[in-house]
Amino acid sequence: MRLLVVEDDPDLNRQLVTALSEADYAVDSAFDGEEGHFLGDTEPYDAVILDLGLPQMDGISVLEKWRRDERKMPVLILTARDRWSDKVAGMDAGADDYVAKPFHMEEILARVRALLRRSAGHAKNEIEVGPLRLDARTSRVTVDGAPIKLTSHEYRLLAYLMHHQGRVVSRTELVEHLYDQDFDRDSNTIEVFVGRLRKKLPSELIETVRGLGYRLGSASDEA
Ligand code: CA
View (tube, rainbow, N blue to C red):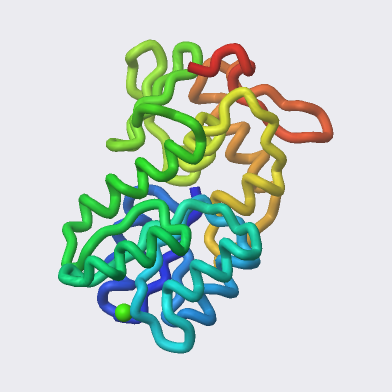
């Protein structure tokens, strides 16, 4: 899953990027409204964390512009604690959730998990496909109850396929959603990671759909 953080306070921006990266998300960041708007307009993020008080273009305008242009990614806004009117304006502009500053990082992480699972149509943090079980809270994966050790990249790939279980996901889509913009993107690396995952999982779980991409679990496995 790939996220965008738009926050002009350099320390807070860095803290958010660090915490989200440690939670195995690919993260891009912007420090003003114009840059943030541009990235959200051109890159396919799974969710965005958007501060409202931003230089160049304020957060509400950024959000309104995205929504006018049919950009539908979930957006979590950061508001000032005592400004209830900002929360109302933000939600009306198309935000999916908000967190008031100052906040605990755990709250941001929990709300991001909730946005991601809702947008993928899952009710719970635990996703199951056959013998495979993934807990988005702990980044833990088990097969028939036995824990599987995955690298961060392997985990991201598997989490994306599991969130979108039963659907054919193309290599291009995987590259766009697993790596941040500074990563040297090469769709061949996806093949390498799929190969490594297959060695760690029951090999038939990830199906190659020739010419189209990969599928994890059949549509009927959908919980
Ligand atoms: Ca700000």
